[in-house]
Amino acid sequence: MTYHALTEAEAIAYARQLPDLFTEGSELVSREIGDGNLNLVFHISEPSTGKSIILKQALPYAKVVGESWPLTLDRARIESEALMIQESLCPDLVPHVHAYEPELALTVMEDLSDHIIMRRGLIEGNRYPRFAGDIGRFLAHTLFYTSDLGMNQQEKKERVKRFINPELCKITEDLIFDDPYTNSPNNNVPPAIRDAVEQVWADTALHLEVAILRDKFLTHAQALLHGDLHTGSIFIKPDSTKVIDPEFAYYGPMGFDIGAVFANLLLNFAAQEGWSRDEASRSDYRAYLTGTIRDTWTTFEQEFRTLWNDHGVDRMAATPGYQDWYMQQVLRDAFGYTGSKMVRRVHGLAQVADINKLEDEAAKERAQRIALQIGTSLIKFNRQADSIEQLLDIAEKAV
Ligand code: ADP
Ligand code: MG
Ligand code: MG
Ligand code: MG
Image (cartoon, rainbow, N blue to C red; front, side):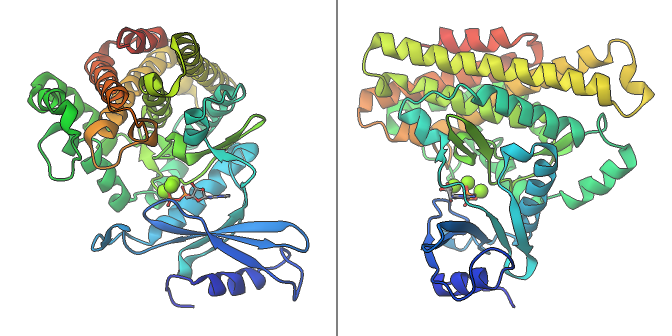
């Protein structure tokens, strides 16, 4: 089958011939539910049995700019391979992949429609007490076992080759590390905060830190990252967390994934003047968000150190002082990438609903200024960080 974007009828025909999923000859229904800009997502269901699956197909271009921005279909392979590696490490935290069809750039996976996208859940003011433990464990296991600490170094190099992902990394390199720090046509600068954005463009001390963070993103093949771990890539319900959409997966610095989670919790934190009914519920919800960051880091660090102590692959991993040094570097990177991922969501190309869906213009402006303040402070402080409490202090001081 040569590549073409599937119609709903073709998606149904494709699903029908998959082994062991649906009843022969029964009626199937398809809905295209993709909310992204790069892919089609078909929900295929069998009303007679209630069975369903998801077909995610990569498009050869980014929808956001019409067909003029070509994007490799190989990212469907990267996504399906990353999901399968993650499933082998944390089977309860990702959708099961039933099949991958390279010709069509198509991944067949478990339907998670009983979950909701976490960004929406946070905007609705929900709390997810399992989340910190789940995502902390996801980060510890996926990052440890794909790094030189948890896998044989020669096998790891073979793994790195499969996850170079230059085109998707280029999107990150431009949209996160470059455009927000200069007057680029890719930015969407909110007029109300132009003054604060111009300060970002003029701040050379900030630019140096961003250049160093970008250098690590470009060169530090530390672990297999998810690469796009924002709250729109997390499906959630009170008793379950599922990480989806790892098409940006590549070998990079661990702090980049950790920072993505923290940044998106803090973007919601920044926007609470618009989402909370009153001051008491606002500070309560903000405390829930900062508590979630603290618990995520604590879980990550504990589990990562335990994996290291129990499953480190070689003698060098036991070098006295090495583990403490390593954890501190990961924490520092997490500060820097948290900041980078916040700043780009304020005035970069792709922004977040937590802020942009605010109807009250004053609340929106406050959210943008708070997010910029937290983001730039974290970037500037990153190389001095030695405790997660400092990250929470920086956040709390900004509101
Ligand atoms: P993109 O890479 O285009 O952002 P995503 O993988 O994030 O694609 O999927 C886009 C949307 O499709 C999700 O926000 C979700 O609503 C829906 N979706 C994706 N995967 C699943 C799944 N396994 N189960 C149910 N819905 C899904
Ligand atoms: Mg999406
Ligand atoms: Mg997505
Ligand atoms: Mg995606």
